[in-house]
Image 1 (cartoon, one colour):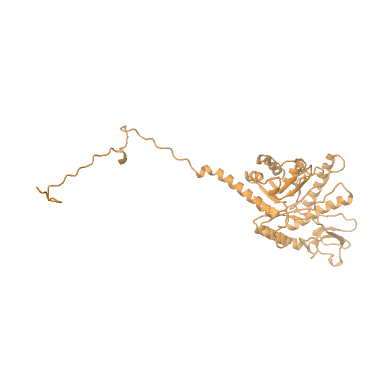
Image 2 (image 1 turned 90 degrees about the vertical axis):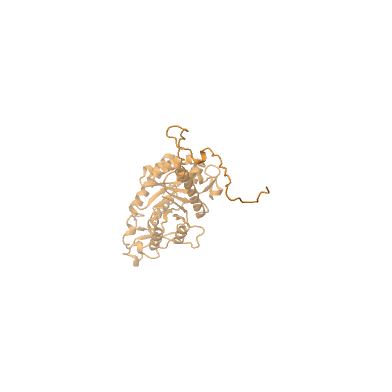
Length: 388
C-alpha cells in the first residue's frame, strides 16, 4: 500500500488544530500526515496536593510527558505515566498548540483512525549529543517526549536525526550515537509497548550524522530503528539528483530491506549549492524530479508512505500522487497491451482448382453466362400497324 501526505497541517486548512489538519488531509484524498513537534515549551513543577493519587494521563488541561518520583529521580521512568502521582514528586508538562492534554491526544487518535490517515511525528530539529551536558540532556528528553506524544496520537514513528559528530574520531562518534539510539529505542519499546519506533533520517550536511551508509548500518545493528529515506537530504549529501529510475531502485531496495519490508520516504524539490548547502523548494522548481521516483515505485508493490516536505506541503503531496498514478497507468497499459489486442488468426489455405476436395466456385467466381435473347411472340401485335 502506498500513502501520500504532508509534513504538517495543510496550508489550505481553514482551522489550525491538528484534528482540522487530519480532516483536511482526508478531504484532499491523502492518507498520511507527519505531525511537526517543533516548538517545545516545557514546564517542570511539583505535584499539587489535589493531584496526588491521580494518573498523569487523566489530568485535564495538563499535557504531562515526564514524571519524577521524588528528589533525585531518573527522568523518563517507563511506567511513571501509568502510575498514580506521589507527593513530593515532580512533573513536566508541555504547552503545545496541537493538544492540551492526553484526552485531546486520544480524540485526535480516534479521528485519524476513523479517516484512515496514518500518523507519524517529527521530533524537534535541534539535537546535540556532543555539546554541553545540558544540550545532551535536552536532546534526550525531547526525543523521549516525542515518543510519549506519538504514543498518545497513535503515531508509529518518532522521526529525528542524531545531530553533529563529536570533536574526536568520526568512528567513535558513530559508535556513541549508535549506543544512544539503542537506548532510546529500548526506552520507546518499554514506554509505548512497542507501538512507537525511532525513525532516523539522513542529513544533507557532512558535519552531521546521517550518510546513507551510517543510517542503514544503524538500522541493521539496532533492532526497531527505522531508516527514513529523505531523498533531498541524500541528494545534497551525495551531490546526486537521482534522475533515472535505475539509480533509485537499488536505493529503495536497501532501505526496504533495512526497515523489514516497509518504507518511509520524504521528498521535495531541492536547490543544491556548495558542499552541505541546499534549500528545499517546490518540486517543479527544484533540481530533483519526482517522475523517476514515481516510475521506480510503480514497478513493484511497495508498502510506503511518501511525505511531502516541500514548502507547498499538501499541494506537492497531491502532485506526487498524480505522478505516481500516471506512472502506474502507463505500466498497466503496457503490460496488458498484448492481451487487449490478440493476434489475428492465420488465413485458411486456398485449395487448387479441380483438385481433390476442391469446392465449387462461388457465384461471384463462376464464368459469366451468355445473356438470354428474348424473341417477340407471334400473337397479338402491339404497337403501330405497318403501311404495307
